[in-house]
Image (cartoon, rainbow, N blue to C red):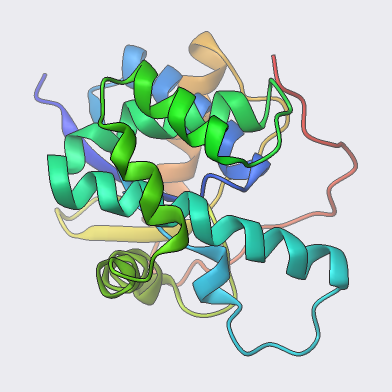
Length: 207
């Protein structure tokens, strides 16, 4: 079977996007899809909002550095580097529980054989136009009332369907992951389907 390209937009700061990304890579191993990673930014998404908690605002302030480093790497070395870089950053942030520091950037960049100089982008606005372009490419098709993750996938008629989620705790594995993918495609590809949601009752589980 020919693999279908599935595009995933993530912000490294988000633990729920991290789990969705691990699930989607599991799906890639058992379904004919190829996952392509892209950068969106919760910091961009929430610019100008006055109704944010102080804790979340601090998270967004920290998040600028992560997405700037990621987009700088993509601009300099191509989009194919994002998969491994996102994994290197996310592993340190989420399962390992490390704080966002320059050392975290340097360790992640070294792991994926990217130049240490890319860490400088965390404190630079030089790549913000590219960051916003990537963000809007992923987010505009799904509207303003969602965050990350966002997935663009082939629809039933050959068109592209875009949707937020799924948010799943913990990330399913094996055929359970595949069945979830089958179901997600079914509902996302149904004309007129917009929302299926329930309150989260679990905290992120990294295993």
